[in-house]
Length: 478
Image (cartoon, rainbow, N blue to C red):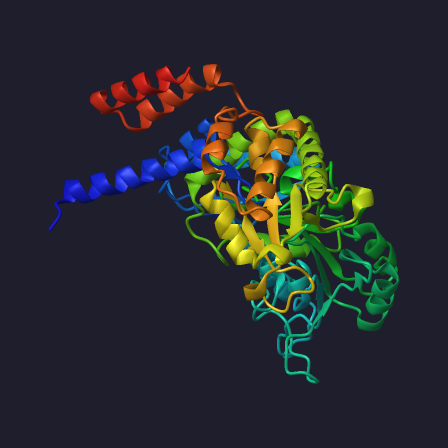
């Protein structure tokens, strides 16, 4: 039987091998992932990791229930300030630890909010009807009854299923809405909550179109935008809080530069008819959904917010240019690209390809992975099930951070064509090409970041032998 040291040594070896493969030898094109910077990672493992800082508003005052939290309290306030600057809004709730939890916090808050006005003695109810994107048309899982919406919506007596109506899609492009049909559907159904946002996300959502329709309703719905996949593109892609959305949710680690967390954002001044909804969102964040809200990643999120606010415009522009160039290059090499060609096939970081003529999506995704190109298979709108996926979904955001420009994605498109169309093995060529893209951008340079990282690690793990070796190895990276 292996000793403790032997088991730990074996695991550490595997960790190192995986790190090398994902960070130095492969191209990471999964659209829901992005490697954080060195300093964000150092923040994640610093002392707040594992600590508690529960707090809530009581009689107008923010009350904390632990001592030793002055630092992390100031971090949370500063992170709210930085992210308020990013979204140009006044309220930020940072305690959800994932995008799905952020959505569930809002759904819980909506149920509490709609029951505030019920007559005394009247039983509480769930949401009467929600409008969202169909899961098979790219809708995000967390906005579905089988996801975070579970238990917060009434059943339709006619069907026995949750009362959800999906946005209608255009006949000639299932990735865009049918606006005429949407207007009719809104008038007919009068939803209480409208949820925009997708996981297969290449074109804009009709936020302003819907907001203009519902603003005159006697009881207008709350408009929510789940920006999990496009949070880091806020402003360049869409700016929903200025287009008429009431609340934005999202995860902070896809196109945003942060660790894995979630957030809720909006503007709810004291005279807003939705002010109580914001109070309910705060209450459902804590104590409704979290206790320990992962303070190490909260600290990392503040670092990421500094980076994003500094490099936002430059990064967003390059991501969208790269995605359009990649899509065009793939089509030129004989791979069918989804989306509207007039819009460059995509307006986000995502590129969707149809590979059914070359094999099942699962098999093609595995073949790409075996050649060090990491993607995920994707059911396209005309597929019957996810297990019979015709597509591959890719995102350019992570490799954009590692320095790739439009011309670099042209070479990557050639590798994909070799793998997908010609079933060639190009793993060694891919590994060699990745060596050109090892330095992360849109953050402090290694020269500036490494000494700071060394000081953080030294303070967190002060054993002199460990600290000395770590600093020595970090300095070799400069």
